[in-house]
Image (cartoon, rainbow, N blue to C red; front, side, top):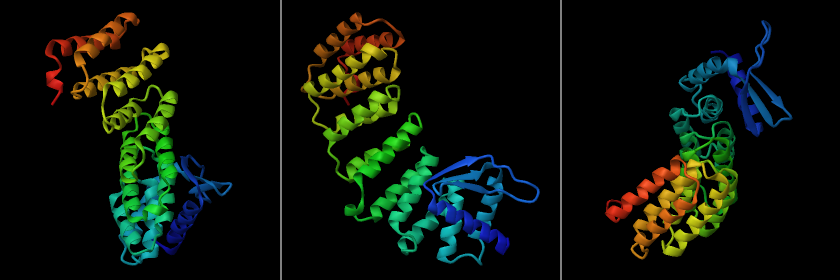
Amino acid sequence: MSLTDWSLICLLSSSIEQCKSIEFMPLTSTGEYQVHCHCEEKIYLCLNVFEIKSIVNLCYSFIFSKDFQNNSQLNISTRVLLCYITECLTSWNIRRRLIVSSTIRIQDELEFVEILLRLKPKSEQLFRYRRWLLKQENLNNISINKELDICDHTAVKHFINYASWLHRRWIIKYLNIDIDEELKRNYLWLEKNISDSSGFSFRAYLISKKNLNENLIEQELQLIDNMFKFYLDRESLWIYRQTLIFLALKCISIDTKQLLIKELNLMKTLQENTFSKKYSQLLNKLLLTDGKQFRD
């Protein structure tokens, strides 16, 4: 380690602080110059994929050095390291201490985490840390639309992103967001991402939080019927339809036998495929047992 090394980490930290998006790309170094990053329009920061190991080693050296332990220095070294290794729990715990000591503003840290989520949209550690940050912030300062937009972006960027949907569940509960409004937003999202079963899993979660009744189940089944007209071969639709049947079995106000017979009759009108066969087999099994094994 040298002052030159520290100057490099400070330069990277400053670049990260000013950018809005980070990507890793192969940047060519020469014998005379080492290229660690490239910034475009002061917004997009490209980090050299060939220099990951050297930068990570430098960051760790500074974090565990007795000579670089003041809050400002730890802020710089952990900020850089987390761009390269977002799952580094040691760095996140250091930054938690910096938040508590007011060395880092919560809103600034939320922006930093948002940038990292564009880079690593499926990082459970990032979402976990973001939830911790939101708990430290005043509720009046939290933007509901911002949090929902982040969930939308990360869910689209990484297929079947349960980490993103889990965060959205927490947001719905923590910020007391209206379930009906969220169901509308979810429908619009599913129209563009019909094959993503995690989006349907989230919808089933929303439905389970409402007062289950026959009309609600029928509405959801009709939604799937409409999608079947164009996407009969999408497994996500069949999984969600099966989930709706299981939810109906737990609702004592619904005539499940009539519902199962109606579903079997519907299957006869659809073009047969692997999913419809398995679904029909399940319906017949439920009819024989009256679905008792799924009621508990």
